[in-house]
Amino acid sequence: VGKLWEHLDQGDGVNHGQRTQDSGPMLLEGIGEVSSIEDIMADIPPKNAADRLVSRYFNSPMPGIVIIHGPAFEQEYKQFWLDPSQVSLPWIAMLFGVLNVGSFMYLRSQEGWPTELGNLLEVMELFQRRSTECLLISKYGTAPTNYTMEALLLNLQGEFVRRRDAHLGLWVMGGVAIRVAMRMGYHRDPDNHPRITPLQGEMRRRIWAEYQCDTRPPSNLLDEDFGPETTQLPPSRPETQLTPVLYTIAKSRLSLIFRTIFNHVSLGRVEAYEEIMTYDQRLHNAYRRLPAKLQIVALEDCITTPPSLLTRRYNLEFLFQKARCMLHRHHMSKSYEDPRYNYSRTACVDAAMTVLTHQANIFKEVQVGGLLYADRWFISSLERHDFLLAAMIICLELSSRTNEQPAPSGNDGFLKFSREAMTQALENSQSFWAELKASSVEAKQAFDMLSVMLGSVATSGTTHIEHISIPPSTEVPLSGSSSMPTQASFSYGTPSVSDQSGFATSIEGIGAMLTSPHIDNWDLWESLIQSPTIPENFELPDLPH
Image (cartoon, rainbow, N blue to C red):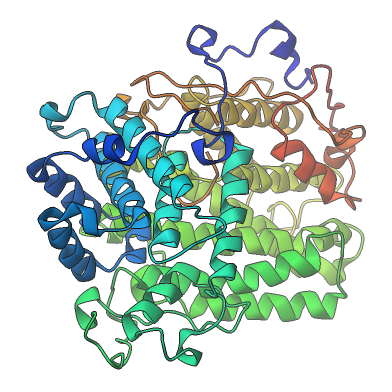
């Protein structure tokens, strides 16, 4: 087995010629001298052009658009053009955020951009800067007011779509946004505060959508169901009706049990097995409660399903399967010596194979003519961690089977997946990362890790990689719901690469995870795959075959 990332000392091979200095979010790292209000306002496009960008935002399939009430914004937007001097700086920051995301929708779809606005990527950069300046001038952190949270979240989204890989600054910005929201009382249900109107209260619930405080979840309502004149919210629509906010409601429910599992199982604590099984039941109950329209179904039954709905289904599915892996992975290792824990082994392998199967299907459907071709940017939002965790579980299962006697039926053990099927799943996952590694340092790391894993467990001496080409249009700054994106680059088709260094956690002994079923330190695994770089001389020992 070769060295993992041994080529780092020779260069990582990810477009060094295009490497630019890594930069963090504007709001955190500063933008130099802040422009005057007059200069900021001068960069708002003419109304006819702004109208198109605003329309793009509110008609986009992105889940985050629900944080702004469309009809209310439209009224305010009309008033703005009648008298631009009467709006607040946070509202202007929000407007620039809407314009920025609307511009990104042109970039994502690659449809005709209004050329009179100038270069698309430069315009997006300008909108992001103006949004940042408005937030800074308005003292968003110390004197937040109406529209501050909407503007701040749009600013965060603007930073997100500028990057391909993870940047710590986005996590910091997320933390800042949570603190600002708590300072403004978003974690307390607005029904307890009579001065908050029903419209304001419901929009605050959409922004917060968090079950750990006393704010109740948002209602399944269309924007047209309530407005500035509403004195009492109407009853929530049944969850058989797919509203834009239904995904937020469903994900917050599933996230609640995921968070519980993470806090009780994945932070160095391994609960008694009875508690593990209780969490497992709660997780499956939450999964079964997903609205029917958001439940995953076979792709052959989705030929009329909008791509945006498919991506939301996949996001929820990955969250569920990741929770299963994290819940059972500690007891999976125990099952190799104690059959009492065989359920955890079965659950882990089944969840991991499901994740890798979905990854392969997504890869096929983003090709020209595929169901996800229109939303092919989706592949960049997928969490590298989820797929590598699934791959690691399959590798551990494969390595453990070398010491198991096949069942009389000829199957490998009591599990339903053969060794060949699991190895093929790893090869398909490697193919996925192979096509992205030239434009993303995270994808390159994932590809290299899969190469080491396959070298350790492959049944043949040569790993076969099926070539599947990603459509050229994915070579743009991309956004999504899951992994936090690294380097700000607006050269169309030119990826940017983070040159971060440092790896605080020692990785000595990580190779033992692939050679022994006694895996007690999954934190070591987490520190490895979440680190920005891998030490040059890191080696994995040979696995038994």
